[in-house]
Image 1 (cartoon, helix red, strand yellow):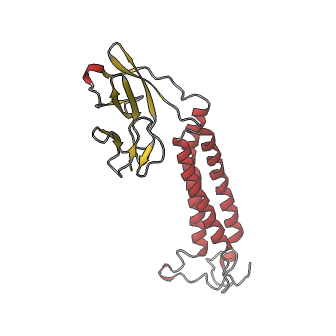
Image 2 (cartoon, helix red, strand yellow):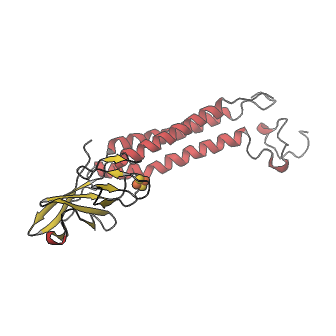
Image 3 (spheres, helix red, strand yellow):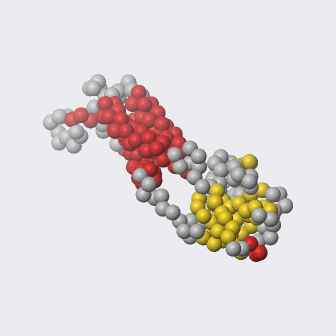
Amino acid sequence: MKRSYIGVITLAIILFLDIICMQLLVHQFFYENYGNVLLYMIIMIILFPVAFIIYKKEKHKGGGASGK
Amino acid sequence: MAEKKNTVRVEDDNYTHNIDRNNERALDRRGFMKTLVGAAGVFAVSSLPWGTIAAKELMGLADKEYPEHKIADIKDVKVGDSVEFHYPSEHDSAVLIRLGENEFVAYQNACTHLRCPVYWVKDQQEMVCPCHHGKFDVKTGAPTAGPPRRPLPEIIVKTKQGSVFAVRVKRYEA
Ligand code: FES
């Protein structure tokens, strides 16, 4: 059975970026750099649809006999 | 097989779709990816409240001036002693330290690591956090030891008619 791990890996990377951004966001918040907080918030909001698109693309890759 | 009553969606109809015993496929590759996407969604949503507060601050809506708050009478605080108070709101605990005859400093004393109350240790001339032994410089509020990385927010104080007043919370320089 052939597997495609690209989706799993890219999604894991996205989640990792999410964690990093969250950390930075919270720190910037307490440092009162509110502009940066907004920037990180936007990054995190954009990362979600990106993750979703990757999921849609990758969900039928590998594993199946249909070779989709 | 296609003739039988097929409960499997066509797109999922492959050689492994019927492996369903003992939850073998409860977390397969696809399920795992779903979880990751869901987690990304949770992160996105959880960033919203921080962002809204930040936006409010940026538009100056939260920029209220707090009224001056009387902390203590000067005669009640000996040099080297500290008093706890709350400023600007009831929930922000703070500490006033008298360093010299006319030298007062005040900080919001929620530790910048995990918000434990920082207190003034007179014999060490240092502000110490009991939770993970964070230490802060009393002159500036800057962290000197332990996990905290961010200085304590300073409260501007002034003395008037024999009492000490909290005037406002100093902003960090960006
Ligand atoms: S909470 Fe103060 S050092 Fe951890």
